[in-house]
Length: 287
Image 1 (cartoon, helix red, strand yellow):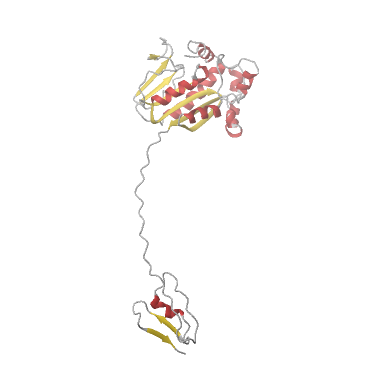
Image 2 (cartoon, rainbow, N blue to C red; image 1 turned 120 degrees about the vertical axis):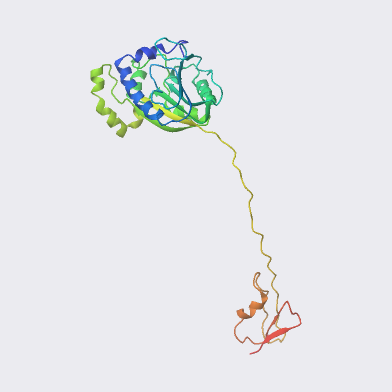
């Protein structure tokens, strides 16, 4: 349920005003651009049926739900937003147009959305940006946005989604016009839409956030193959038995004894080398 215990009547009436129509035009264009490239089987729009967020969706099964059923709207199911009547991991896409701002328990609504989404399913959330000219006018006490709603900033929303293992894939901001109340002055601010996207993109009056439900699975780790270490024969110490030369120190590990003669200077006098394979033979180098 929302904060007033009834449907979002305040927002429904606000959408009929010039500023509400101005916002609807931008949101419809943005939602059509996002939903047309999301593929799957089942998509649901929760709340605010005045904005047909799934008009461009290619999914074969799309529904609109609300807290109350109206004859004028294409609502097929009425339910509590905090308790979604869908099976776990049954939906590919959920759209929340300005639902969290008017919900008594926005965290519970997001938990329910995470439950009904399949792994790698997506959620699209629309909301009013408090860091904007429209939000600033609302905080100054001049009622410009719908009443009975709590504005949720984009960083705060991203933190909520991160706790539910849902990563934000992209964010869009729009409605950079000055907070006027007539069509005439709002239309004169069209140039601010182009300037705002370039110079102050995060200060649009409305945002659309798209997030993906991440599913952490197991990672198979194969056996680690290691080559066995090569066995190296130890070096053999050789001494001078003639007394005319010095002593040859122990051979370095990994050097075959038969190659040690190559390390000696040519014609070194009195040097003897013992071959380990033939212990009784002594090779002498005389000067």
